[in-house]
Amino acid sequence: MRTPQLCLNFGLLATPGARLATTQAIKADAVQFVLMRQLPGLLILIAALAAQALARQPLHAKHAMVVSRETHATDAGIAILHSGGNAVDAAIAVAFSLSVTLPSAGNLGGGGFMLIRLANGTSTFLDFRERAPLSASRNMYLDPKTGRITGDSLVGYRASGVPGTVRGLDLAYTKFGTKPWKDLVQPAVTLATDGFPIGWGLAQALRSQANTDKLSRFPESKRIFLKDGAYYDFEENFRQPELARTLTRLRDLGAKDFYEGETARLLAADMAAHGGEITLEDLKQYKAIERQPLEGTYKGYGIITAPPPSSGGVGIIQMLGMLALTDYAKDGAGSASSLHYEAEVMRRYFADRAELLGDPDFTKLSVKGLTSPDYLRKRRDSIEPAKVTPSIQLKAGDPGPYESPETTHFSIVDAAGNAVSMTYTLNAGYGSGVTATGLGFLLNNEMDDFAADPGQPNLFGLIQGEANAIAPRKTPLSSMTPTIVTKDDKLYMVVGSPGGPTIINAVLEVILNVLDFGMNMQQAVDQPRIHHQWMPDTLSLENTVSPDTIALLRQFGHTVRPTASIAEVEAIRSFGDWLEGAPDGRVESAAKGY
Ligand code: GLY
Image (cartoon, rainbow, N blue to C red; front, side, top):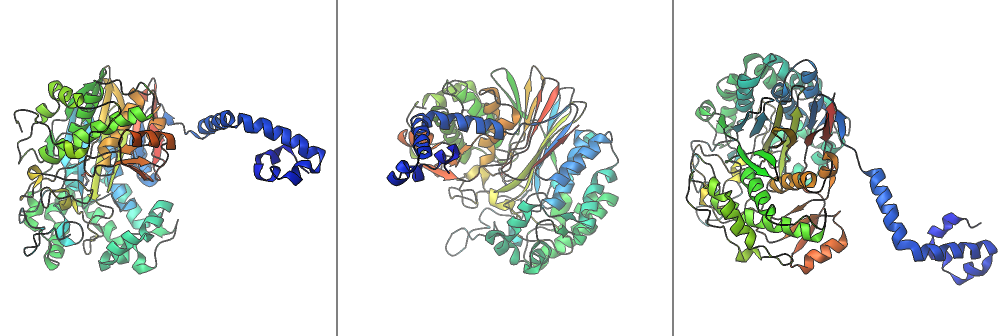
């Protein structure tokens, strides 16, 4: 018997025999006719209702919040906050926990940046990025015969810069920590010793061809992360006894063990045995650096962000500065015209990045020039409303006189209003693929963030110049962009992301979604993203961007490249009396608060 539900089956009802068969069928046809005429409007209504029903709300909490990429790490941070620790204490616990539960990016063998804004309004930036070893040289990744890039900066023992994470967390603790150090490392020791149930994402990632290929090349990595080829199942308990021993030494002896003690000796010996570059002296000399954060404003909001050797903060200030001189938002979020303007400012910033940014301790940079209103007006004036500027016609600008694909981010706000925005990384997922023998942690392949051959693209397709050429002790240019937004001098938003160069654009887009398009924190994180990095001259768009928007962008001249997912933002907004936590649903992130 036909019922109104059958009206959804237009194919069946359209056959002439069925149409004349019964009175019910005729009634059903009438319903169908009405529905067909009203269909476009109805579909839009249904889509809007479904979108509302499906839209996730941010997690609300009154006092404190942790948003990270992994649930056990978030739990560790919340437990520290609950027990009276501050946001920096919690950040240290989260970072060490992620080194156990998120081996693709959480790390002891990598580096990163921590942006801290205290409740009293002061802020600081800790740079614990990897540095080039003392033996490094400009052409170390070029084949002497062919002059071509060898690939050693990506996989294997020669790919690693001197790790900075442990020194960075130690510096954060020395300056701001309040709980006993042991309490902050203990959650990670427990997770590594007792194990934790492997999440869906991690189980799948470890089985992927690319990760299997890389990790299988190194017996220690194959044994620990691939179970010698048998693989871990979803929810199988994952114990890491070697890492537990390393973390136990860290807990009991502090960062000194990592840079001068047993851990340092084992790491340097493993490097020497496999043709790696990092020596005991490199480890001993490693220093984390406290820097002044980069600051700017956008439409009355304060922007506190990452200074060089991150390229990201300059990008955020530049792109917001150019957009402030347009009415790019007038057609609404996700409109072709707003995405076009966003893509054009991205293109201009990345053209500058390619030539003009590097380690400020080695290269003269023009951060003031690159972010000055006069310069940004000139750059903005070259943007046409509905027409691309082909990247080939666009070089780095002249900013005036000189002064000087896997990562993870978490955001924390404590009950006193202190905030931490921290991004750290091994560079590519699972770094160089090498697990330090007997130590249980993966090493970074951050040397690939240098320009191995200035002018040639790196892992992320980024073209970079002499400013980012390799030199001993130098820091490779980064895209990591931990950022904090203030409103009326009060904390407003804590935001950041992994994703190589897509980090900078994702942070920009999330800020715009809140400040210009009125979204709450979760909507802003969930909104489809785009990415343009000057070269290659393609506009990447998440698959959720609508086809008619894509068609318009093509008309404007963009070469579009649909892609499954761009970046992973973990963010918190302080809104009224509440904190809004927004984990990124593109991955298994976790927000918790109280
Ligand atoms: N390793 C990615 C970045 O720092 O940009």
